[in-house]
Each structure stands twice: as structure tokens, then as C-alpha cells.
Image 1 (cartoon, rainbow, N blue to C red):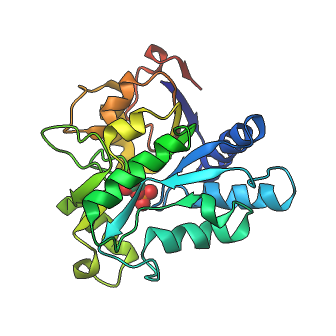
Image 2 (cartoon, protein in one colour; image 1 turned 45 degrees about the horizontal axis):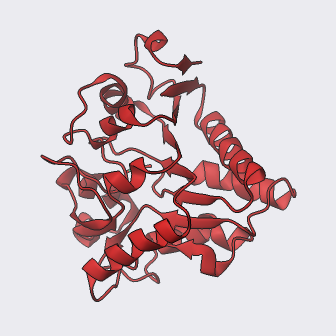
Length: 251
Ligand code: PGA
């Protein structure tokens, strides 16, 4: 695990955007795994600016998002479909038919999950997966549990997640209680992973993720077993990381 401790949210966003843009430059037909939430908004803004300046071209890129609320239609302003178009897709040139987001209105969720997995495989697997992390240690919507869930699946959202995400909705009651999420195996199969976190509310979980027991109780802890993970955190989220020297790179 490489850990970069940066000074600000802005610096975290720029560094993450540079990694994504480098990936696309080196392999123009990259398959990107994308995340939603408050954390990557700045990274998407940077990528849009880079695209507008002609520094990166997405025309051969394919994307797979980590998750989507269920049931929720793509027209709903709180859907991750809506988030992705607003923050990224409508500003760049990734072709519409290369964009994959779980269907929050799928009639048959099991088929939807199986098809999502198959489509990732047919695209050649994910080259670079972007992750945020929930204060409870979730990645995607893989909530703390007694076991790791392997493939894309229907999740019952954790009470903490519903509370954390209520800020985006008019009220807590409006937050869907379920979601479709890539599983831990889906995420771990990505060739490279970058995980972003900022703010003090993530400090405890970042410490658990990098140096705690590998356990489904902190789903992100499984990333200790992945060979190519880059963590970019601001000073506040890095607050509880005392012994940085144990990691491959800590700057
Ligand atoms: P956040 O969510 O970026 O809104 O903090 C992260 C996550 O839940 O994965």
C-alpha cells in the first residue's frame, strides 16, 4: 500500500485526477471503476478541466460504477446515475454506451448483478478502481458484516451509512435502505486501486484499514491484500497514522 498524505482536499483531488489521467494516457481504452459520494467530486472537477484543456481524452474509455441505490430511478437527483452525469459524464467524451452503472430499477436484481459482473469481465476487467471509504469502513456499499460478499449483490444499507448519506436527501427517511454494489472480489480483481479520504471523520477508519485486522467488520481492510493500492489522504484523515514507515511509500 502506498500512502500519500497531502495538505488539502484540493491537493488530494489533483493527485487522484493525475493518476486517472495517466492511466487513460498510457492505456486509452482503459476500464475505469468509479466511485460517488462527496469525496471524489473534486477529482471529477479536475478531470473535466483536464479534458477541456485537451490534456486527456476519454473516447475509448469504459466505466463501471461501484454501486447504485435500490430502488431508485436514474432520473432521481440522488441517484448515482444522476451524480455521475452531473459531475463527470456530461462534460467529457466517454461514449454513452461505454458507461455502466447498476440499474436501480432492475426488475430482477439477481440477473442485474450477474450481468454487471459478466460485463466487467467481457470488458477485460477493471484497470483502475477509484474508491472512497465510509466512516464504517465500507468500500462501494460493502457494509461491515460477518463475511466478505464476493460479487455484485443487493445490499441492505447499514444504519450508519443511511445517516451519513442523509445529508444528500431531504430527510433520512428518503434514503433508500438497499443498494446494488460491486462485491469485494469485484473490487479486489481491479489491477490498480486508488482510495481517497479527507477529513477527521475518516481518521479512525483509515488507521484500521491500513494497519488493523483484515476483517469483514472493516471491509476496506481487505485492501491490505491487494498488490497495487494507492491511498491519498489529507492531514486530517491521516491523523491517526503514526508509523508511516511501515508502508511502501508514505509522503
Ligand atoms: P463520502 O462517502 O465520500 O460521501 O464520504 C464515501 C463512501 O461512503 O464511500
